[in-house]
Image (cartoon, rainbow, N blue to C red):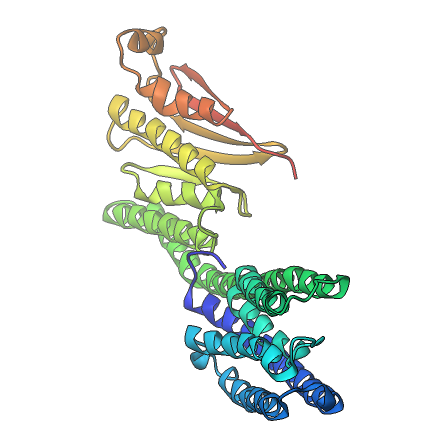
Length: 386
């Protein structure tokens, strides 16, 4: 599980834990029956049969309590898990008193698996490892306390506990992570489907009306021409807003839709900015999207500063194999020859740092063409081919 999760993510993780504890409940019943049968069969091995019967009775009663307690996530507190493991360790510790110093198997035997697996499910590999260490230490400790020799069978049991606990814990964590990712993907797919449905409805209705108003008002001229211009601006803004929704569910810290980010820049930047993007999202690493958008914004700032506040500009995004290319063009008077070099020599590094520097840091390039027809920046960022 990551540090940042949504409530839906938490519900998915708890649902997985619920399923695992339901499976563990069956395991608890099986190992409890096994414990009772084996201790009845070996009843002649006890020096203190009453103590042995008491230990087995407590384990059976605790199994019933555990089945009820672990069934509800609200009851799976550290106290419950601590008591569960403490009873398992205590049953092991009482074995020499009940069976004498020459005992072979502990009273609970495989019954301790219930507590160990509960720790692994709840606290993943760290919990599984901690529980395995405590159970193994108790088992080896009582044998050494009565001067028993640790044989190959004892070593094998401890070895299985030490690798089994962490492995089960890791698998539980992986299952929870996959459940969270699956639910997130399903929510993203549902949201994308709904956005597509709404975009289709808007396109078939509002956008067509705005486009018709723009065309008819422009043909009529006069005061209606201003209405047509406003309708055209609203049409572009609405199209951009619909396009931007493709970035809503992008996972934080991973990728962003560069097309959507540029559309957002087009609607938020002062002046008239027409943004043309492919009909599909263009996912790039988040830091690449941020830097490219910042470089494009710097190009548009130059249009405002050196052409006019309301001067039009055009932004074109093209995704080619192995790279993304963004062109920013205006129809101003162009940049005088040597102007950029002169500015850099005077210490004015706006273009060098804000545009060329950003692209160079990304391993790309920023090429400018200028003349009496205007200025065009071509920003190229290499991307790994998929």
